[in-house]
Length: 616
Image (cartoon, rainbow, N blue to C red; front, side, top):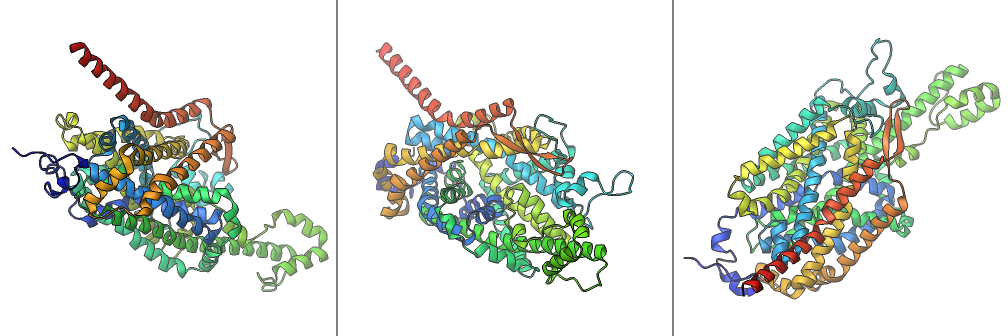
């Protein structure tokens, strides 16, 4: 008979026992093939769509290059310490989120449950993005690209009226992809094309996780590395585009006055927090498959630095593309104005150019005041700065702005395939982490694994998510997507990570955890990590939590952006009462897991004591 290892607090005795591995339990637990595989898994999970469509938007909104100052500070104060904390907890406890926090304290089992609930919510809607990426990828092989021009109307006498009021890229997104309804109240039917793409996306995810770390570990090499290859190709192409330098100048010109804006610092902290995927339980799940002696401190630093560097790198690519798009639109606007003036005033060809347009407009206004006044409503005010100031994030940047820039490139089909393949790899990489956060606690449960194989458990989770995800393929699905994206995780994750930090430092004990880390990696914890965990990071999370809570309260009636096909633009509407109820349930269902878990544990222990005393 083989004796189990001593408790986690038994110091070096635990390290000597099978090199830190409990023989009976840990031999059965799958491990990563090597530390590099674990790092790739973390990078694939952390480096996601937010690096491509969220960070560039924040740079645009909050001071260009000046935004990097608060961003780097928040990385040091918040990002690296909390990432290291989660990796260390997962590697030390060798369990998923529920089991890990239950080992630290039985009263904290609700923390792990809350992480699983949030990850479940995220998985339900996040894979819809992969479905959209598949949809665009399939259409990228057409020549010309289907979003390059507006389609003809039913009489084939002109273009579709809705498309003429907006742009071909917006029309393809809102009408041909989403077939979006005018409001949340008009649910509409399931769009079978999107439903098929969603089913395909879930099938791909299932195949990637089918054999656990054995299959996931191979997939992450592709999902982590391929996006960088595409970004490098886009960087080379982007820098050679006409007007790319305008976008890069706009990005790197610091607007230091934004540093006095509290929202700049809040946005930097929020971006670091969510881009690393803290609180979902995915990092704990990944780290639980590490060898106990793995240097998770070094890996936490590597992953956080690569994640932030990728955000900056992706921003350079994005702003070069953005500069090209803005310059293209600006010059198109100028050419239209020149053509209109030349036709109206019968000017000689070549007499009116972009360089002398302003002077000629003044001259024509003085020489032909009546004709110019009649023409004035048709003259657009063309501005490169205004084009660059147009801030877009999320699906608008990924599927509208980028596709608009791609359609104007040479060999547009090639760049379209590369771009949407990259989005797909980023999305699938993040999905692997989300699903791991759900599956690891389930497969850790002997009650479940004794009845069902891991393949069946994985298939069931994917199937349930796919069926519920069909909601997001309805005509009003994009509005429900925004609800889940905005409210399913924000407050919940902040509360989860706050409790995690307090639990490690003040319930489990920082000195005790420090000894555990010394046992694992063989060296003492330095003052930086201890200071961040015990004071700086919790205070920062509390500040973020208060800010978001106050922001929700001060906002009043929550609103959303709806597509008005008659105007060809987005309009603001109030959420209906049932949508507000869903938002409340999304927030409460995860956050209430923490106090309810503690309460149920207390009641169970109380009843157990009473039974013991009754028997005695």
